[in-house]
Length: 318
Image (cartoon, rainbow, N blue to C red; front, side, top):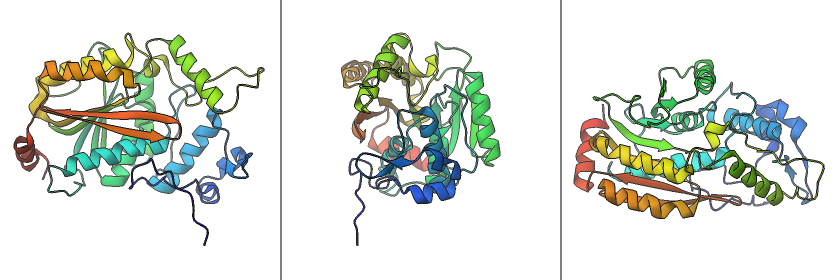
């Protein structure tokens, strides 16, 4: 029996640890067939430098593994890599299990706040399919929210996902959460570039890693797309995460774990300093990797272990 190579850096529960089975994916989403070919290594694959191919692959993965029948995003909006996003969710499940007797909590008693849900709505889709969690997704982009709302409605998830517009680009939690609300988790994939010029440099590096540097007739593109507000903000991810940590301190009793992705290891020292100043009781840094892409999950809480167990007993169960 032929063993299928695994992507061992992904979480053990990640459904995408094995190589993509393109026959099954095409069966789930026939449009993908137009983008699949045999690569130089003799394996079926897609051109990951082609945004349309990446979108078609995502649509097939969501259909096959997460029962998402309808999914699309507007042109030039962020098209996230599904395996990496799933990893984030599974590590968050492990984090919640610590306060639940080692058992991963499932169902709508688990409420999650997604800061920057985006047009793709990817975290609510994966987490609801995997664990039944309920979400509040926020964003400053009305077009993104309209598209996310369409995805939710088409897949009959309106009772599981609520969307809210963040009217102020200067705020993260303020203005989109209520004083009597409690969340088991917050999550975020922050804009990690300080400018569009920096984002384009990142695209150039990806282009080279994908072996496209020899083609001088093609201009490097952001193969996963992204609007400027999705990709960059003043000060980059370091400033965004610092602001998030500072704001989180005022709602420490309303959330079990605050979390965010950190794309650049150079952003960690400032984040650790901000956590100390904010008075975080506990924090975790979890290394994650998908292919050549490395990132980190940073989690923090203002509750000690006993308080976390008490919090879960009061707010995490119905």
